[in-house]
Image (cartoon, rainbow, N blue to C red; front, top):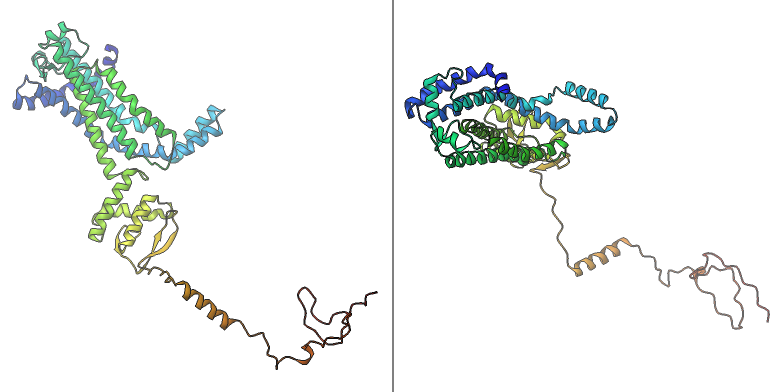
Length: 426
């Protein structure tokens, strides 16, 4: 650890100076030798660092979403060049360059915090061993060694021996209880932050290996914090617990106000926006206009939540414009179906179903229609032509030859004059 501390020694002096400045402020309120003065100094150091890292956090969010979008293309490249690792790497780098994506951007906040973390660890380790470090002189060192947070010294660890803990003016039970509670809270905050990201702020319509990696990290990170936490001083646990709580709150804000497209968080966000716009009948801020403008510009590429947002506004008599404004809709508007196909909706009257008729009404209507449509084909006796009258029967038995007159065609016979049959031989 001394080797690692020496690598970050260039930032040890600035970190110790910031802690001393905050301690001078809180010492006037709570007393210079109290755990509140030193503990709040560490908390303030975390807040200051995280405020400076907000631009990197925003870049991390954009990079993470870009990586989620690129996962299908990356998978295709891996399958296409699975036997050629060099070509696979070249195609990956080409894809990153074309899309302007940097895979390391998602790790920037953690990497940027690392120097401050190790510098703080080096400062607290010097306090535990009684060594002055940075701008912390002998007087401040003695004050820091007397500071206790809920009975646990600032530089004590969970794995310290009872003799070392007693030298810092505390009992081993107090140190282990406080450190155990802080480690549990630290692991829980990390797990909840990652779970919130997986369940609310991930596009559920796209199944990618990235989601599986995030799910794995959701369980791996808390275990790592639990393993390393037992070797962290109480002051470092305060630092790491504070940064976890900050990350959790910061992510909750981002998920609520800038969710990932296609996620459950976006569905809840658009529902709140729809209620707000419907209530006022317009978009009231530039941010709302930009959101509506982005949704309208997608056209047929909108996801199901964005189509539902547009359709709900339409049903309420409002129409979203390309500039992000919302105006009163026309009497006939276009409503998008689930597949993005526009259909006529809004104030268009619905088609009425015909009234159901009784059986007697249906039968009488059918008979009446048949009587009006079918022509009369039967002829009365007086109207029959003479040629069509049947020939008189012959007295003698035998065959009936044709007499030249036209007889009616019987079933199964050909129409027209029939050929006479030859007489049968007796």
